[in-house]
Structure formats: structure tokens, C-alpha cells
Image 1 (cartoon, rainbow, N blue to C red):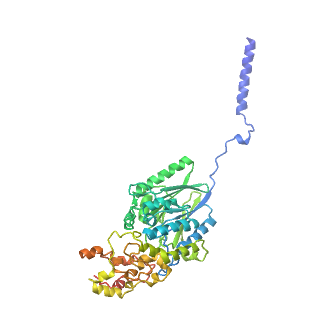
Image 2: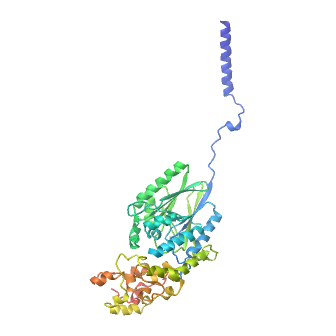
Image 3: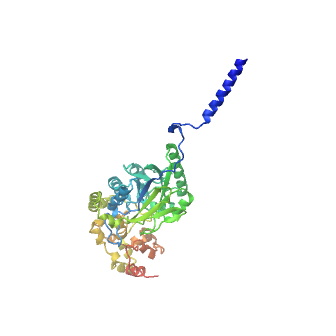
Length: 467
């Protein structure tokens, strides 16, 4: 009995000693002590280079006071960003050619196979220049181009099936980046004009779904998305509305608007919406710091500033321009089926118009519009779709200008260049055919091209009576 009490006392003493030992301060190896929370270290800055909708002049445009540098300037613009910020993403807003039909397909294959992979631009937000070539060509050729990823969440074939991916998830340094691109429904009319069968589904629904799908994939792969960018083939207003309806984007960029860029981005809350103008004259740089502060966008002149630097694509572009001038356009124009028919009807030529509109035809023939464009026909600009659209008549439609050897009135700004194809008018003699006003002049005579443009005086000089 006494032995039991002794054992019990010893047990209690031992238990108390063990408890005091467990609670007493003591030295413990550092590896077993939980680390105190530390402030999150700043992550590296990710810089974006946003190349605006481009024109395939390849050389500075003579009709413009503020010349673009063409595709030759992209490599220098991108390299300047990458040298300073190793974590960079370069995105093109697409539309590298205004042409369509067979010439557009030739140009697209060349640009995206031989030129863009050497510029540092990896991602392209697809717009009219790409989607206007038709769903078959987009799916079978463009989206299989090595080195370039096309993005458009709501481009579909005539059966409603998607043509390309709508989002891209990547890591720049150790930061997760989500890129989403859509086309506004407003471009569908232009696609129809080009003879494309591509359908544009709801942009709002596409943005919401693409962003959700991208974030879901990021969660599966363990990537924390810190930066989200939205690229819209539409106006700044359309892009701003999409940003407002899908919160969470870091910044957005729009592709459509006036020739010159917005000096300051539109703000939707804290999200800047960028617009860089047309003809590759300006580009946006967007720096997204790693400390959680707001993105810092800045507008940069691309054009002539970068033309002084050697370009790795100059020789390639020169070859393509010469090939287009010498043979390609003429071959396309002469091959049945290579140019789509204008959905408004067939072209009849200015002489047929003159049969009835004698006085106007005489005045028009005496104007600069009524003469074949030497600036186009006798120079390498005959290969530039950005020039041809304003200097000649319907170069990419069946029945339009046939190339440098065509000295008909279609080699100038004929009646049908402004009023549209006259086939239906010849048949019906309707009075409401092709009515246009000063705004039609302004489509080519933009302020940066025709800085002293007087609409009324030009209207009179072109052989029109003011109404």
C-alpha cells in the first residue's frame, strides 16, 4: 500500500516536472520556429508594347505630314522596351493589310510568316484585316502560323464555331498575365463588304466568358493572375463599355477611331482605355509595377523616330513590295475569282456614267480626281493597300482597277469610287443612287493627310454642284 502511494507521488511529481519543462523557455533550433509574416517583396515590372492598327505602306507616306514608319519600325520600338524591361509583352492590334480576296491572303501569309516573328511581337488581336479573309483561311492558315498567337474570343464561322482562342495565359517573370481579345459587333458590316463569312458573336458575353475561362485555367495551373489586359477591335466607347461590364482588367486598348491617337487614355474607374491611332505612327507602352500601384501608360511616337535604326525586316519588306508591284497585284486582278464581287453590285466604269451625266463628267475629268494617279501607278506605292484605297477605284473588287498597267478612269478617283458601283443605277436610273456628302471626302482627306483641306472648295473642284 505504501509502495503504491510512493509510486503515485512520484508519478504526480514527474508529470508536474514534465509540464513545467514543456512550458519553460528553452533554446529551439531556428528551423522549427514559424517565421514571422514578412511584407511581400516587390515583383518585377511587366512592360507592354501595344502596336496600333497598322498600314502596309512599308515606307513613310508622302501625303501625310506625320508619316508612319510602317512595319519596319516595329522591331526598334519593341527592342527599346525589352532592353529596359526583360519582362515584357508585345501585342499588335492586327489589321496589317487593308486588302482582301487573294491579295489579302498573300499579304497576310507574308506578314505573319516572314515579318512579324522577327519584330518581337508575339500576340495579335485579330480584326478586319485577319477576319476579313474568311473563316477557312483564318482556321487553316493564320492560326497555324508559327511564332504568332492570334486572339479573338467572339470570331466564329457560319455555324457559330470559334475560329481561334479567346484568351492567353502566360507568366512574365513570376507574374501571371491574362490577355483577352474580342471584336465589336460593329465590324461585321465591314467583314460582309470584304466577302468574309466570319460571324461576330456578342462581345459582352465573350469578354465575360473568356476572362472566367482564363482565370479558371490559372487556378488549375497554380498561376496567380495579377495583370489582365483587354484588346478590342472597336472604338474607345465600345471598349470602355466592355471594361465597365467586366471588372478586373488592368488596362484595355481599342483599335478603331480617328487617324491620330488619344493623347490621354480614357479612364473607366481606375482602368485606362488606350487608343493609338492608325498607320503605325504611335504606340502605347504600359508599365505595370510589382508593388500593386496603378499601371503607367505612355504614348510613344513610332514612325520616323525608329526608321533611322537598322531594321531586321527591311530587306524582306522591300522584296515583297517589289514583288507586289511587278506581278502579284496584276496576276490577282487578272485571275477570275481572286477578287470578290462588291456586295453593292458591279462596276460599269466612268464612261458609262458620262453617257448621262455629261456636264459633271467633263468637270470631273478636268479635276485631279479624274486623272489616273501617277503617284500610285509609277511608284512602289502601287503595292501599298493603304495608298490604293484612296487613289484608285475599287482595287480589291472584281471589276475595279487592274493594276499599274490599267490606265482607265479606274486608275483615278472615278465616279464609282465615291458613289459606289453603278450597275444597279444603270438598270433602274433611280435618283437615290449613291448619294454622298462632304463626309465621304473626309474618309480619305483626313486632317493629317490633307491639313489644309476645304470641303466646299474640294467639292466644287471635283465637279459637283453644292446643294
